[in-house]
Length: 115
Length: 112
Image 1 (cartoon, each protein chain N blue to C red):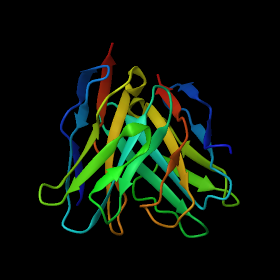
Image 2 (cartoon, helix red, strand yellow):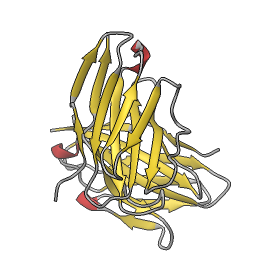
Image 3 (cartoon, helix red, strand yellow):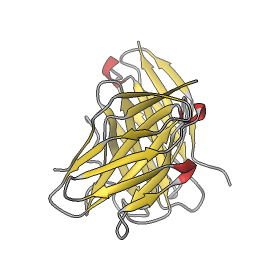
Image 4 (cartoon, rainbow over the protein chains, first blue to last red):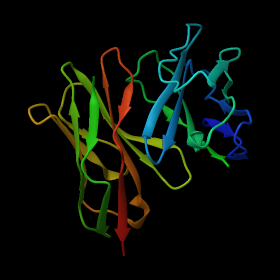
């Protein structure tokens, strides 16, 4: 079946602009995760949605970052007033279980470049 | 807090030779461990995971890893690599109730 998809695959923006990144998880997966992959910081957890529970936002680096998940499916990660240090690959993953030890299936990522 | 350390940032290896990627973790509680692979311009794919039971875990593509509690290690091995194994490999760990923590990654570079 279809895997996790993300759009756009590449996004170039100017410093100070807002961006929205989209993630379509595998159908039926209740858990959805956002990660950031950058040269300096490696892979970092950003936010975690599980069903209808309140999301775990503890990994968001600043209040410029926010995410929502509509209807328990599609998720959008929004970065306001982008900064150059926001340049990274943003990865989305989903899983069918309720535990962090359940296998996560990753999308191909969105490469964000802030000029 | 849990941390995961991958000791080598890059491992060059000749085709058909064996390879070992080292991973050490630190945790004061029970831990679950994973190895993911990332091919160029793709997302991460699970190679294998250790949750409990046998300390030798076999995964996809001929990879295996051994959980060693006394040495807090979870090294990944493959007896004979192919050109297609050229990729970034990530070790990750999860302590009960906590998030998945990734190591810095090891790039396997297979040479013909």
